[in-house]
Image (cartoon, rainbow, N blue to C red; front, side):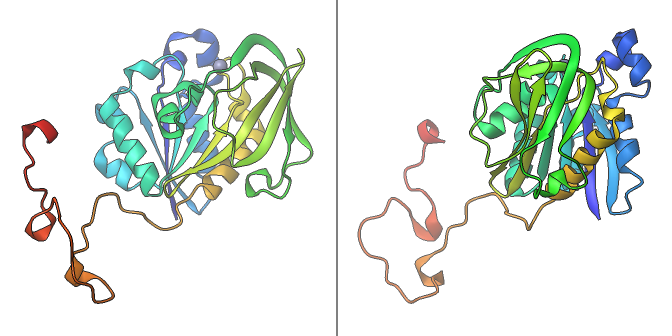
Length: 263
Ligand code: ZN
């Protein structure tokens, strides 16, 4: 069973009539609703206004794959929560970053780049071309996904070179965009998928739902990489060794002379 948490800032659905008409229960509940019928997925939701943004230590520990949707309130996400999510990704939790998550704190922190791009809100056609039909995230799709009305996201896109490229988008206005990319950080898998502007019913599109479902399965943890230092003492080495030379460490590996300045 893959334990999935769908996180949404849940702002525009409550303050913009056009968005509320498409997602009356919020984008998170729309995404959760198409994931839940899959018997291998155990799905919960979390939103910005909940305590800890719904991402307590316990929730993060019990999440295998986190989906992130944010746009208007990136700066309201507490740094402590971002640090917690980042640590869990390094341990092995998957992150599926959706649409304007490209400049969320967690996305830019985990990838280390700006996430900036060019954009245009004109309701134009988007074709999401499959660049790697053999990739598990592209399973069940044809040559491309056609989205009748979309927001243009264009290059240059401030991301590290994708480790795997699954999709590239074309827009009616002529731009192209690396809209479906994979990375690994620590033991965690990260997938960014660009379609999802909130004034269009993009998360109701069956093929978009297929991509997100595939991505959740792809991003599930493979093993667990615990964070934290571990000092292996000379007498604990697998081969017999004798410690020689000077050391800044005392018995048991403690750092000698550690004071306030280097605490
Ligand atoms: Zn948008």
